[in-house]
Image (cartoon, rainbow, N blue to C red; front, side):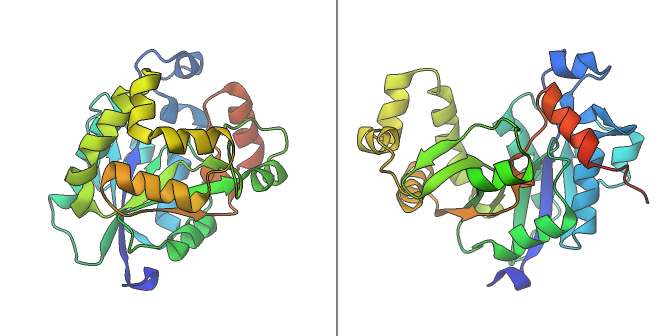
Length: 260
């Protein structure tokens, strides 16, 4: 199966911490509802999914508004954690059945700069034979698109990258890799335990910048138990989420209100 034969559904992660200071400063309960030109930030993401012409079904996890519900097929209650929301969203998609050629795009609701054309390119380029595909963006592409915007970068032997705010998975495999992801997240504040999971040799290569993208793919595959592959994309919007005032100012400057 190639990308042109793939059917796409989407899970949009629109949850958040109640009382989040950034959201509260803008008069809403959760970040995806922060207005940009009078519409919730998440509306731009949902509009992109629809206008891409690729996504057939959308499950939205989190609080909604009438503007958002125009785009949503299935609404899912916020389960209070990233993995809980991911699992609930994928379950909502699978309850009505899956086509044999169906893949799920998981996207956060805070990347309003992503365009429909960029999303089509990501989906059409995805190595969908992998169970888990994670787009990454080179630092030079981020800085060329949005000069001065601060992102978190990781230096590898192949270059310096930031992670995307979307990924692609085979929904049939989620029960296989979620337990391992939970284990990694649970260990994130325990350096020795996390190092043991990642592997000291991999951690050493990362720290010495000798780890390659291929090496990282293999390590993730080993950890989560399904085939994982990175997708290097030139689209900086994939890795540009809105989580502080400077990001919001960028989005306001870059975007016009969606219509229709």
